[in-house]
Length: 489
Image (cartoon, rainbow, N blue to C red; front, side, top):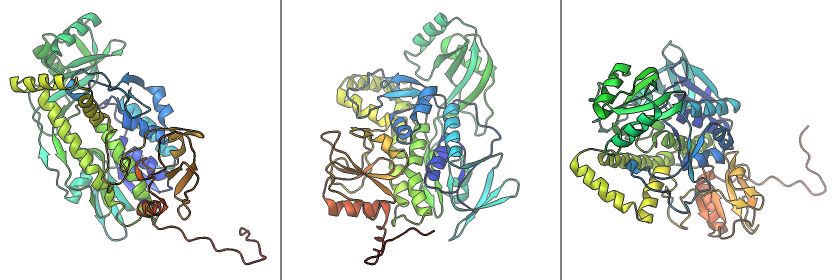
């Protein structure tokens, strides 16, 4: 029996596996595909996901394979500079293809002891008070304490649970792929610049050696389960939209995606949970999907590990859905808005021009940018100090960077004066006494870096420790007078 079975070896499932293994949770990842996908559906990491990687000591790996780009101009492709003084030490976007992200996360999960099995499709599950029995396509069964469905927008896990997935079907479809291009780079640039003045769902981006990433609106919406487009279909759509097919040939891969927008009615059913696209789907506008899933996993991992380990306070696991579902709903709304603003209809174009004017105001630009890069999120943790519920940015302390102290996935008390204590919780929470970073109060951070207490007195601190990390451990029994306590042989 394993502690947790994760269905789906995409970025959400792999990030979750790594988080669980930080806490010695026996973790098995199942994926129906024999090999990792080569389809590049996502092109990078936004600021909050970059912070997540930094908090777990993974960022250097990603930086080796990525390219840093300026923040700005995300919302519906409206040109805008990065807002000044963003609340982060990582004010950039990291361009990195999704297959590389998947590989790096898989390597991390395996390093920590997770098992990944490919060509293993989950087709059934039954749960009881003690665990979940997972049925695989070949007839084998696996017994687990918990199951997490990270198996995409057409999630088998979600369907088996009977969890509703309300929303809107696709109204538009886009063709995407990587192909060689015969046209010279100057011609490609000139045509793309002209077409993108109005059609924001169009583009050809060079990848090197004459290969381009091609994005073009489809003629209509395909039926569910339609095969990938052919190169001839891509050529026809390029000619229809831009007047030329650029001589595209020899595709590496081709795919299609729609703008369906749906949100699971709940994220948990007993011992089974949903994360990533299994819980929410939306248009890829703004590049938020992969990032949203990674951040789901970052929120869920330590909570599920505490539940498995028997140290979770009452209701901790339910805060996963309570916190992350509203975040997903907000992403669905901003992608809906962006799709409308990218329409060629006169009314939508008028609203787009108006919003482009408003983005010229710093606070509007900051608000929309923070929506996309996810650093403006504040979980509703009951009020108090303005920091409570927010993630703490990286800080330079006397003893090093804050994020460097969070690699183990434990809670952390930043004590500026050395007058506080985590006695009773030291097995779960690190106590860091450091007077660096002037102007920052004492703070208690969850393993995901969100603040749950800030400088409000030791009694409130103990209450926050108990709420998020469970009851205090009993004090060790003192040795009898005149006798020394020794470790057992």
